[in-house]
Length: 299
Image 1 (cartoon, one colour):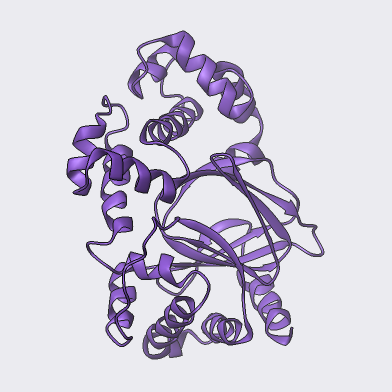
Image 2 (image 1 turned 90 degrees about the vertical axis):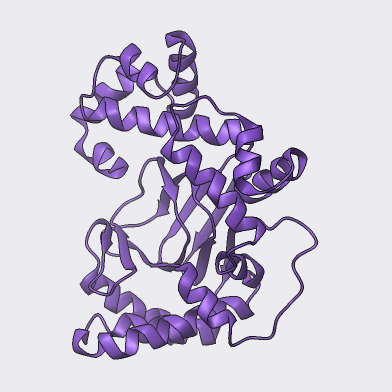
């Protein structure tokens, strides 16, 4: 497609290695000149347009592969593992990331006919193929990287169009839920953000259900539909990601770090850390400190 070709040219000039904020608010670029090792992170609501190369992301036991011309929609805070699978110095992985602001989504929804709420819980992660109309809007937004003087007037209008195109697409219900204050997705997000902010605290599902405004069975069902994991599994992912960051920054001995993120048992901490990252905490931290590329991928 001509739009993809021009997007490649734009991002080749504007995207630096790694994930970096762009000159436009809410926009970021991603670039990798070679395949990367799996990296754990928490994805926040956004849409990611792959312009060149390919990537694989794991959410719990689900695998998502996406490449040039695809877009990834994330509608909740989700702990994932991802790595670039296709990239080379002469054909780097290139991606444009646009944060999905609930206020913008809600504003666009006001212009659309009301629809009935979904009968089943809505997932929080999907990969779709971009159509010509959506790619055209994304290209016009990316062109503002070359014309920053136009951005204050045009960027907001183009972002609204992109949101509109997403709402009209296959993942429209996911995006719609972002802009609805009392949607099931918003209720689950309240609980997941509490877990992220209080990851070291004991998790009480009844308390989270009250925070989300749901019964315990309904909360379990919707939380797993959105995040692909139970609240306890979600907390474990967040705890271990936090622990890895503390170990890399020299935040203490292994046992102390495990205790700091909420583990009472050092053996359980080491066992679960190794299961997620492929090596015991001490050995993994030592490798990261001596491998700048691996450490940079985490940051």
